Image (tube, rainbow, N blue to C red; front, side, top):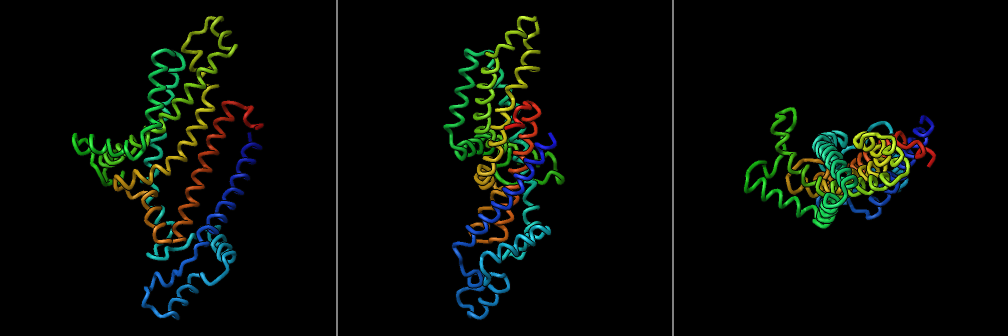
Length: 313
């Protein structure tokens, strides 16, 4: 297990360096006159050149990247070109909002998907067809449409939840829960559709194994067979899909945060990307990649624990 973790950590570190280099290169390719944007079209060229030099934009792209990388390794991701706000502080203020959504969606998806998948895989028949219909409908409905329907029904008509806004957890736990419930449910629909189908397929496959028939012939109760043997072997593929869904949620969070007016990473990405604020964008890219790496590492650890053969893959 230790050697497996070391290999995964080394691969993750290499991935971080590669993605940071590619992202910086792509962001620097469509070079814009940042000094001109900051000072306006009427500013003198000497002042524009001075601003660009102060920001280091008069250096070759490779030098700019190495400078950024050296500062990043010391924990300094720079400051925003347009607001002079520290990148770490700006992102840190937004992370709790998006993290609330991600954790909530992951928990709901895991519980509901495994319940539906086990139910369909064990009972088959009408239960199986019902879960398959849920999967098809969940895939077919666009995420923004699900979000808008939930807003119209639960926020506008029933008035159970606020339509927009966010309340910090430490300010009011009840207010926080009311503001994140609808966004979490909206993001969970597509995730449940995907993960439940994987759980269902894995359970059906494991239930056909010879060792399951042997356990039945020995008189073990169906509950013990399912939860102690079948679920353990069927969980690995489902957890992998759940990890992929977590990564995909980052894209869905952009739309959901815009609709609900949540001050999270998604809305921040849209705002600063339209400005071309490279320090902020690079910070967002690195935080996103680190989050993806951590989730994939956790999934690999759990999968390798459930199936030791995965460590050799």
